[in-house]
Image (cartoon, rainbow, N blue to C red; front, side):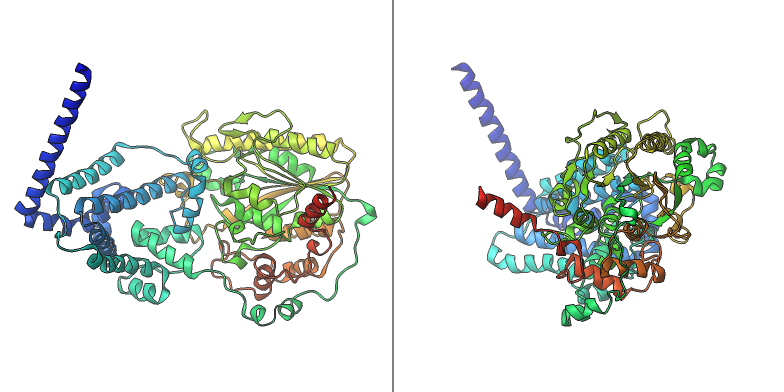
Length: 629
C-alpha cells in the first residue's frame, strides 16, 4: 500500500512539473515574441549550415563554400524555409516542425557522410531504393561516430530545445482548414523543384547550380564540390527523374518493323564444334582489380612489390588467355556488371540505372542462361551472400537458373575470410556442381570475399588489407584451375572483377593517385582470365578492350553454339561499336540499334528472337503438373 502511494506521489510530482513547464512555455510564447520570430527566421539558415558543415567538417570550409557559391547557399536556405513553413502551417508548433525537418536533413547528411567515406560515391536519391537492404548496407559501411559528429548533433538538439522552451508557434485562431492548403502548397513547391523539369531547370539556372549531365562517378564528385551536399542531392534527383527511359519512337509506332530493321539477315549455321558442349563457368569476383595498371604511381607512394599479390592471377593467366573488358561501374553497384553479363545488353541503353534488375518486368527473362538452358545445359547461380540483397532470389528466379545457391545453401564446407564467405568456398562449390551435373553446366558466380570494409587485417592501411584479400582469391583461382586441368570434362572458366574496389573517399588510394574525371578510364578496364582445358580456339578474342556485355557472344562464337538473328546481330555490332559505356565514354552518342534491342528485351514485347521462343513456360508446366496430380 505504501509503495502504491509512493508511485502515485511520484506520478503527481512529474505531472505537476510537466504542467509548470507547459505554463512557462505558454508564457514564453507571449512574453518573447521577438525572440520567437528570430528563432523561426534563423532556423532554415541554421539547419542548412549544420547539414553542410557535417560534410565540410570545419567551419572555415563552410565559410569558403558560402563565399564562393552564395547563390547556391541562398537556394538551400529558401528550400529549407519552404519545407519549414509547410511543416509549421501543418503542425503550428515551431519546435516540432524543427525537429521533423532536422531529423530529415541530418539523417541524409549523416548517410552521405558515411557513404562517401565508405566508397567514394556521393548519396543520390536513387540510393533510397536500397533502404529495404539497410541491414546489409550497414555491414558494408564505415560507420564511425566521431566527436565532431556528436558535437554537431548536440548543437542541432540544443537549437530544438531552445525552440521548445521559447515555444514559437502560429496563432491559435488559425484553424487547420485554413492552414492545410498553403502548408501543402509549400511542400509541393519543393517537390516540383525536383520532379518537374519545367520548374527545376529555370530554378537551378537562376541560382547557378552545376547542372552538367554526368553518370561518371568522378564527374559527379566534381559536381558535388561545386554544388555542396543539399543542392547536389536535389539536382541529381531531378537529373535521375528526367533521365527515365522512354520507349523508342520507332518502336512505339511499329515494334515489329523497328526490331526487324536491326536484326542480322545472314545468320551462320552452327551447332557446337565437334559436338562438344563445354561447361561454361563465369566467376565475377567482387571488387577484384589489378592495380598494377598504376604501378609507377603506387611505387611513388611507397607501395612496392605488387607482383607478389598477383602471383596467383599471373599463374592463372599463364594457363589461359587474358585481356580487358570495359565494365559499367566503379566502386559499387555490382549488379550493373552482373546485368551486362547475364543479359548480354548494355546498361547505357537503359540510361545507366544503378540497379537495372529493378527495371525488369515480372516475367521470364531472355537471359544468357536461358540460351544455355535451351541447348540442354544445367544452369546455376552462386552468390555467397543474402538472397534478399538487390532482391536477387525473387528477380533471378525468372532467369532460368535450375539452381540458385546463396549463403545458406552451400553444399560444401563453409569458412570465412575477413567479413565474408571465403572465395575458396565458392571455388569448391563450383567444382562440386561440375562433378555432380550429368549435363554440361553453365554457371555464374558472383563472389563476396573482397567486398568492403577493409579495416580488418594485419595492417592499418586498408589498401594493403585489400591486396591481401586479392592475393588469397588469386591463389585459390590458380589452384582451382589446376584441379580442373586434371578433369576430363571440357570446361571454360572466365575470371573477372566486377569493378575496382570501394576505398575510403577522404584519403583513399584514388585521391592519392590524383584520379579525376579526366584520367579515370583505367578504373573501368577490368583484366580478365579466360581458361579452357580442350584447346579451344580463342583467336576471336579482341585485342582491344570491348564492353563486357559482348562477352557472352564471344563465348558462343568460340564454342560454335547455335545462333539466332539476335545473337548474330550482337556479334556483328561488336565490330562497329566495341565499347558502349557512359562511364568509359561519358559523352558517347546513343546507338539506336543497341538502345532499341535492349528496350525490346527488357521493357518491350521481346520481339527479337530469344531462347524463350523454344523453352517451355515454367508456369504452364507447373499448372499442367498440378492438374495432372
